[in-house]
Image 1 (tube, protein in one colour):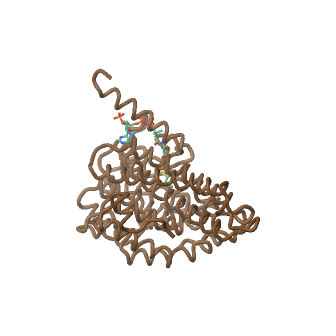
Image 2: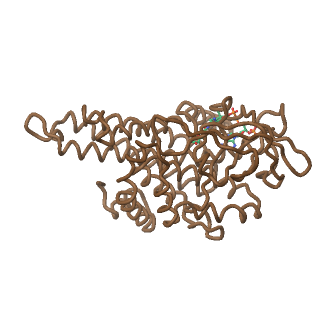
Image 3: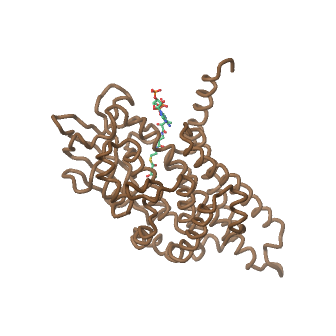
Length: 397
Ligand code: CAA
């Protein structure tokens, strides 16, 4: 369900014809192929392989990478629209796509050597292999620089020991990127990043986490026990890993913004539908102003968040630093996703609390948006730091 035609979307969001066409095509695909099974995958906490197969056929896993590596060569806004539309139908499938593209594959494209790109990107762009991003550790959550995983250079290899937790796509991936300390006592400048392939001896995945939401997505621990990694699997140069991963998270935060839009839109659509159907006091509850106010609040905040996410996606492609705007887009969109899901349950009343309606799933899925890829509080911290940095760079300010 949508309240805007393709032409209106082009005018209002400033989409190109291609972006609008993509939006419509993926909306139809998501409604027809993804949405009907979302509740079932969620209930069984089953990884949605069928969705992955269908999305491979559409070329979604390589959507934002150049054709020379097997990608579709589309821009970041097109990618964000794809994540939004898939997440509107199934957030677990949306996060699988987002973690693959913006977290697991992008660092190889951005920081990899030509040889690494040729070796890894084609299978990642086709979706034959999924990608994961290993940053978080028991002592490195919000403090991403608190990495304890160690990579010790020994000849033309690194000996890696340590573990990563809460890793999306961790057990289903074919390739992962991860951080490890290569120079101890050098703070974040002692951290480097690496590419690792599934099947590397000593590299294993733990059992699947049991979660509040995004129950169908794959979240596991990754263990490194005396892993011997060829030195040519270092990504970029030693000591650059923390910065590379922070830059990766800037893009990832656009993805979380886009996922949040999808969840918020699904919540609004469900609330409108239910309000028009549900009758109390002799009429549809949509006729009551108390209900109308909730719909108006959800829709207004959703549009504001969408404009911020879309504009940040365009801003990224212009090539400058977009750290502040990505953090703002994620903060705003995740807040409205949580709020919209909560209000959608409110409109449904008792029915919304039951699993017969999808809004309780949207509510559970929305919560992660305020946590993953940096909590809302970390986003505020990033925004304030960037404001102060920008001010310091302006003479006489
Ligand atoms: N772009 C480029 N460089 C950056 C950068 C960015 N966005 N952010 C930081 N840096 C650079 C800084 O400029 C600095 O470099 P110099 O020393 O050369 O100036 C260096 O990196 C260190 O930066 P900080 O001093 O700001 O580092 P910090 O230790 O204070 O940490 C932080 C900053 C913002 C709190 C950061 O740790 C952070 O973002 N934490 C949240 C982590 C996070 O989002 N985790 C999510 C895990 S992934 C996930 O959730 C995925 C999933 O599966 C769902």
